[in-house]
Image (cartoon, rainbow, N blue to C red; front, side, top):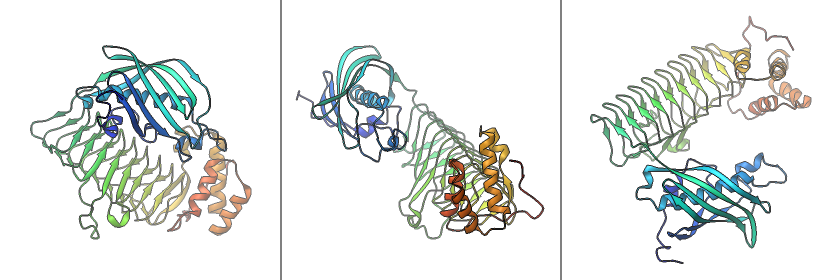
Amino acid sequence: MPDGAQRAIDLAGLVRQIPTHYPFVLVDRVVEHDPAGRLVAIKNVTGSEEFFEGHFPGAPVMPGVLLMEGLAQAAGIWLLNDAADPARLEVHVVGIDEAKFRRPALPGDQLRLEITVLKRRGPLCRVRGEVRSGEHRVAEANLLLRVASLEPPDVDPTARVSPEAVLGPGVKVGPYSVVGPRVRIGPGTELASHVVLDGDTELGADNRLYPFCSVGLAPQDQKYHGEHTRLVIGDRNVVREFVTIHPGTGGGGGLTRIGSDNLFMAYAHVAHDCLVGSHTIFANGATLAGHVEVADWATIGAYSGVHQFCRVGTHAFVGGYTVATKDVLPYSKTVGNRACIYGVNSIGLTRRGFAAETIAAIRRAFRVLVQSRLNTSEAVARLEAEASPLPEVRGLVEFIRSARRGVILKRHSRHRISEEA
């Protein structure tokens, strides 16, 4: 191995500079590194890889595009490790040619990703990549990569940002905002004036935080005694004025997690150990107690409260001023104190592109659950016996089966679910 090849590589740090994140980081370790133009990395293919769930279930094969992605990531590691300041750079794939696939990559394979630099000019670099499994060649290709310079963070002089905080490229921190030492902020995220970020808090890319919101401070839970817990927030979320979002507690798993593309209107509150999906809307003053789960595309109306340990199902609509002390069914309209079910969230489903046949099937399932005069166990058994092929109906049944606090099935006394097909 050439001189300098044993120099340690900060693999995790360099992988973060490649515009790909878990579960599609495809480099486990670097075993050879030649600064003159060569790198060899290892990817262990396991049966638990998420892409196997949909790529030929029963006969799993690693997709060819991910083999190319693994080569690109290995090449990106070589390029960034060679840079004077890798934190200010990002690697993009701009071309792939002469790609050939020799044999499938299967669970249990240890893939050897071999990269050789062919030519480098300015920000462009052409490399030859080969994927091997043992003595077998799995795939090969020529890749063209571009090294892009990233915009540095912009911090207002009146802001107080800890030197230990990690600010990604293009982050903007507005006047009088405060950022604590364990905070990590992804690229393009903007903090308006008077934002407070603290605790072990991680924000993804392109989030927008408005004045006087408070994110990552200690939970409002008397059982919390300062133990190390975390808050993880995804990408492109909007956090409006006076919103509060708290990390987990030691007794609740230690983590509050929020997905991407969510809107938290003014004065909304997400308490400790909550799990919030993506594309949700929290109207003004909507409140989650601790340990609540909110699935993708749910809407929580203004000044509504969700009791601790409850769940709100996917595409559910919770009307304003609702108090939910049991799980809110997926696809439902649930309103009131105490909450009653007002049928299917058909307007929301239509807006999100659900087929008319799917909405009709969900309505039929709701009639069995709410209007058939069967108890919950009998209604669920009937739906299981009907064996609907639609994943929405099967998911509705599984949601009820897995409920720990029960589900809201009480129908408003003056409302009937539409009988249309």
